[in-house]
Image (cartoon, one colour):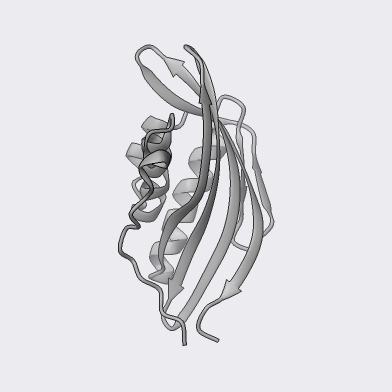
Length: 152
């Protein structure tokens, strides 16, 4: 039987030095912690997002109101299920100019409810923009690559 560990992985220094890695990790941790307020500060989502819904399909969100509804509903559902989730970055690439940037992040999102342990392998493209002195996530698009049940 596979058992998931919730300890934070040690990421390679090469990955840690790439643009937006710290913000990407913080975004993923906001989802883990259901920290809607901080996630709202990091994400602008001018052009919406494409996320993975609870059935494994695509969740198309086109505006900020839809974004707020999606994440507040998702966090409420996960809380009701007493689910634990976290993400582990497996690959990361990024480019940055003075006003814009992008990153491509591969990650495994772990999902645990009771005895059920799942791993969702995801690849996401994130567009970043500079707003004043801060970087904001302006567009997020994720695709589900693989799903594994780890305790079967």
